[in-house]
Each structure stands twice: as C-alpha cells, then as structure tokens.
Image (cartoon, rainbow, N blue to C red; front, side, top):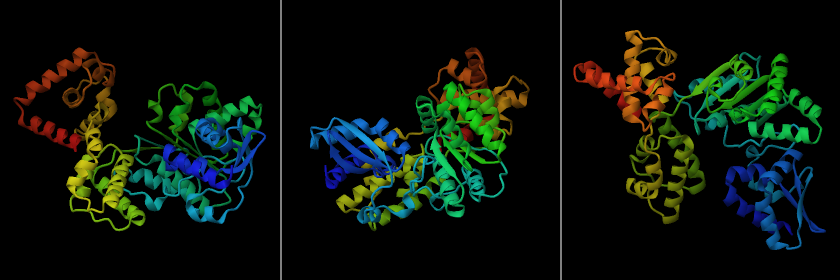
Length: 448
C-alpha cells in the first residue's frame, strides 16, 4: 500500500470519525507499507498506537483489506514520522503537538486557546482562574476544579492552559489527558506489569490535567491510583487541573476521600451561557468561518435569532453556524432568517428550551436571596419555606418530572409534600399580586 492510498483511507476516516478525532489520532500515523500479511504504521508514541489499535482498528483494517486482501493484521511501531513537506504545510504548527516520549497525553487542539475563548458573566471566574494557572507562577489553589454541562468550555480552558504553559514555560512537564485515557494507561500498566513505571511517570509531571474525571467513579482500582497520584503531586506542590460535568460532591460513586481532596482547592462552576455570551460567540465564530468560506453575507437579525433559539450549548451553536456557512457557500445565497428556518429546522426543534429542576432551584434561591442548601434542607421558616414551595410549583409546571421525582430533588421529600406545596402556591397566586409577579418573572428568566 503506497502513501497515496493511505491518504485516501485517512480522508475517509476524517469524514467518519470527525475532524478533531482524525487530527488527534489518525493524522499522526505514517503508513510504512505491507509485508508478510502485516500492514505497519509508525505512531508518535506507544500510547497513540495502542489507543488507535483499541479504538479504530476495525475501521482502518477493513479499508486496508479492500486494497490488499492478503493483509491479516496491523502493527504499530513507535518513532518520529518521516518528514513530509506537503503534510507539514497542510497542518498549522499551532494545531500540532510534537510527540515527545511516554509522557505524551492526548493531543491538544490548536483552536482551543485563550484568544478564541469568549468571556462572559457565566464563565468569567473560570476563565480568570485558568489564566492564573497558565501564568505558571506559585501554586495558589490546588487543584483547580472546573465543572459544568456539555459544551460550556471546560475542555477549551484546559487546552488553553496547556498551550499557554507550553509557550511560556517549555521546561515544564505538562500532561493533559482524559480520565478514560488515565484509566486505560493504568490498566495497560497492570497488564504489562509496569505499574512502577506508571507511578513514576505520573508523579514526574509538573502540571497534571485530567478531563471528565467523573468517568473514574465506580472504578475502584483506578480511583485508588488516582488518589495516590493526586496526593503525591500536591505534596510536591505540583499543579493539578481537573474537569467534570458536576461538582465533586455530586459525582455518584466517587470515593469520599477523593471528593474531599478535590474540594480543597478552587471549585468553579461554568454556568449555562446567557444571551449576550451566545451572541458574542456567534460573532467570533463567524469571523473564523469567513477565513475558510470567504465573505458570506448574513442578514440582520440572524445572530440574534440563533442566540435566542439555540441555548443548549456552544457546540450545537457552532454546528448550526457551520451548517449555515456551508449551505450559503454551496448555493451562493445570503444567509437569511428564512434560510435559517429551513436549514436548521431539526436543530431548532431539538434545541427547544428544556428547564431542569436544578435550574429552577438555583434561580429561585438567587431571586429570594437564600442558600440552595437551605431550600433542599429541613428548615421550615417562612423565608425559606415560601421560596421552596414556589420552586416546587415551577418544577411541576415547567418540567415533565413526576411528583416523586421532584420530591427526590428536594432533599428526598415525599410526593405529597410536593403536591401540598404546589396547591399552596396556586391558592396564594390568586390572592397575592406581588407573588404572582415574582413567579412570572422567574418563569421568563428560566425560559430565556
């Protein structure tokens, strides 16, 4: 199999697994050819080779067999890829991570840097904390724990920290990887009886960043090793950055000692995006897409419409804009509101606002200036009981949750308690205009 044939297979995989996965795992491979029924690839590190073999073996192998039917297996050799001028020119230097040694973690995405991160009220604290860590000064909070829903910028900030540290302090050993990759390398070390090498490797880093740490919950052996690695690095005053989809204390099946250690540093919540932040992201992404698609004319009001309607997360918002640019470029027409309605009909339907009980609780607690823990706790004073009942009422009206489900989210209360609270608010709304106004304001805030 010659290089051109592998290039064709690589491009097919790009369409199948996505640009990011292709750039991280397939693009770094170099096909060395076929001999004795074995197709050989050169990978930049053992970790990358093992990951590709484990994750993409079938997709690669089936395509190779269509070109060479005598192939019976795949083999990966670790080493520096052969320099190729055309290939190097096609990938911006800022988008590549040079392979180093066994310390190599997950490749970093060149788009995820601080310059491309749009800052707004929901994420300004997380951005400021990430900036502080990226300065590589004395460790002031350890670990930095970032949490929030899908597509709110956790991974973007972690990549940005790594890029900044690589630029400012190339002498530092910075390791970024997902919790799944940490677990895989640990299991691999156990299997190959190289556990001491694993321990020494992870304890030698200056900055350890682990993404989506919730995935190690329930994996006892991995949690044990992660705990000891965590402690060893903290004792050496090395920086740790962790992300998850929820706060440490809310990760189910995560050992209490790990949860406790994670809360010793700075825990920062990336809140769901607001309208202003989504609008800023759309303008920033449009400027970036214009470099690829050329000048695309966009009708006034399109960005505002998208910022109002697509509120799920930034990735969906970016995908919607990408589709509009591609569609406009193909048919050679201006992006209008009518085009948006037609082109994004499926996304607009699926992005209808879905309010959660947790959002309602947080918003009501903020509005009435009480602590969320008090709303969920046993206190029955009027200043707490009234907002709690309003939150119960809005949960019943604005979500599809059943009364028992709502009760569980209100500190494990019985469904009859929820029903009593709902009926009480219905009665009070008929008599208290101020309460009625408060509830309507909260409803509008939750639906925006």
